[in-house]
Length: 165
Image (cartoon, rainbow, N blue to C red):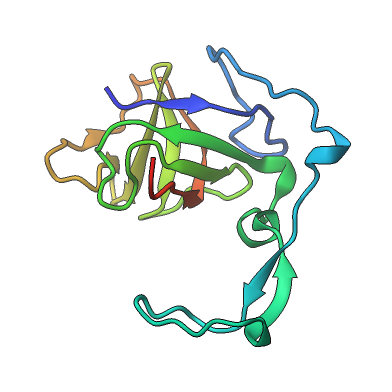
């Protein structure tokens, strides 16, 4: 079973995703003034692995990870991935950045609730059916049907990965 731990709560309004049911939400504490965004330098050159020579002369601008990865602050949430059904793209313990304001479309990676269980899968839209597919080919497709209680939570727009944990 591959599921995801919900780290934040919110409701998307004005769309077909407003329906939320049977979840136990984990709410974060309010963010204190000390925990505001931290701006870090963004270098104006790409990094070739194995080469050195980066210096302050190449700083293009300063930005936060929020600016880089969160387009819609009020509709962006984080999940922690568990399992290997989406490898090699998504690995165990990756932090998924999920935006509820983006409509799910063909070939996008989505977070979806199926009969109360949360999954991360690739949405495949074919002419007469919709399929949730794992990137890891050892897992079977999930053919979406009217008998299933399916709620699309959002579209995965990015991820964060610890290299040494």
